[in-house]
Length: 147
Length: 163
Image (cartoon, rainbow over all chains, first blue to last red; front, side, top):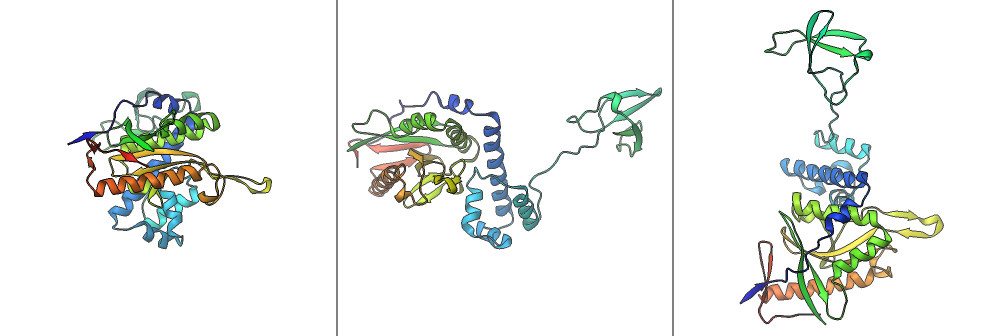
């Protein structure tokens, strides 16, 4: 009769080991694994193998294998080459137009701002208000603020 | 030498095991962790996060492991060459055996100091041990003394892993 292997040697300090690293190191590991996993997903979606990507990029298969293994420090040039070869976006940059999703009063008119929560402009930096196309179901005009 | 198999980590998608070799104070993975903590804690932490992400998010897919003869190894966090000063460090290597997408045996390793592992004074012994263990495991699975079920490695009652 078969029995499971011993289970009494479970590590209790594993999280602590990870926690002791520089935050950017852990962030790097997560990012590079996400990127290589996404590329592998794209290849599968397109019915391609790593050797096909190697051929498209004029690289050796071993090099592609190293990239996909995880923990590879992708350069922007490499990412760009892969994006072009596969005709897919891998790295997306958030829209940086400074428009906001708050209702505010400007010159006694109410305006609705749409956009990025990630790069809010303080009011003293607003220099131009430009009317843009309102959202389809919006009842107020939408304005974009450009620094 | 008798080797005892133990589970060391359990995640949603992968269970990790290691071996405790007869006569040694620590199991193989613990020995690696304790030495790497001193020699290069940041590389160790990055490798640990890699192991955790495989365990929690991705599963033990083949792409994450580099085949080394009949064993496997995890990718080093980074390579470091300073050939002008004669220093070479090919990164922290951890040898392992990937059995299924749910079961991995973590073994031992060290900083690789030569291009070929056979020439590396640090890693050669760990690589050779990983190959030996992989061969014994392969034979045991073939002879049905070991069975892999989900996250579990099941061993026949009176079966001992002998190296």
